[in-house]
Image (cartoon, rainbow, N blue to C red):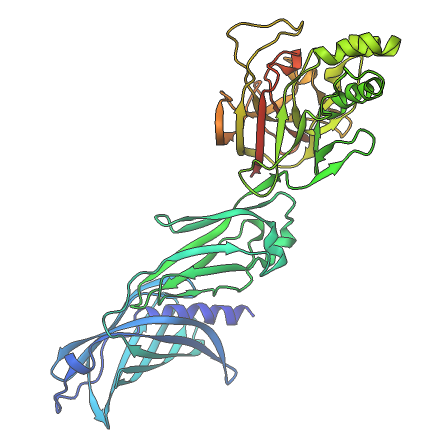
Length: 523
């Protein structure tokens, strides 16, 4: 096996300088400029003879060979930027080849010797050109260092180009369609084509295991008349950081190579599916989400019984977080709304008896709509402890991105229900990565703001103003003098609220924060 691989490497070396001269025949004059000269585009194959059997050594499907006039009856051939199995060899020239007429075509031959670091080889070249075609055969008898003999064959068959072919060699579209292959559903968002750098990158879901990424199937579009190898629709292995090279050959033979790879993994957080709470009759986005709906729903459900006998009692909607059709992507987004409980608390005191009065004393005056990654477990004695942020996650976060729209309410209230003149409400959108030795450890609405909270990285907006859909793209930064350590365990969480000071029960009723298509990108 080692010997075969060595001979395969030798085949590459043989091609470097295998054309130096050809036999000459001065007896004929040929219309070279009009009939023969130009660029030829065709297929080049290399094979290695071993045990009397020719073993394929590689193929270039769109190899260009240029033919020019060297004399009245001689031509020169050159292969510019020749590459073999993705390895760039350089220019190869075959000079002053005399032509001999054979019917309506012309034959030529050449003999040369190749000397390389690991071998010496004798090369016999034969070719036929005419009627718009070029065929070339190379028989190489090599002697490797140590006296080992090896035979190599190179064959080429090409067609003369007209001269008006396009030189554009671009990948114009590179997409993954789950309708083409189920594995393609792991790709999140679109691909990024960097034409200047000749790179194409894409993101995959954070759940994408290496085994799932071994057979992604891209659908590729290229410049008109161009070809690409590997071809569109062929499954490729992008696992474990692998880079796949796609070679585009234009109509005139111009070649461009694109490096394609996964840039990062993404936790996609959309709001297309919602789950129903049978007890309190509200919806929450399906997935690792929670909201403060559970707290407001208990207050409002208590009012329902009172409203049955007191017509002046109005029961507000249960939800401070709900779905909306005002979207940036897809069909539904999330709407977070700050509400005032002042009237609800008063109704509970007036008509709810001892239990109603107790609930009114515990409920805040202002409740901000909140949506976060984690769970909600009502703690009436310490409401902020009801919100438990984060889920276990591996990997270093890079970005927190998505779309939001925010409209502040008209009147701002402090925690005691007093209006605050000239104060404008703000939303808050941020994400954190924090150390968690096990699943049981969690940061809640109180501990996440404490100075000793084990937060390692954070990404958050500076100003929450946006009357129309606005994209945010936030970098995770290390904080609290801490550094990410891949050997430690972490929880990741995002927290969004319609009132930035909602954790101290301040804000403007009717402040609305809309969220859509959130993503956390990891290394």
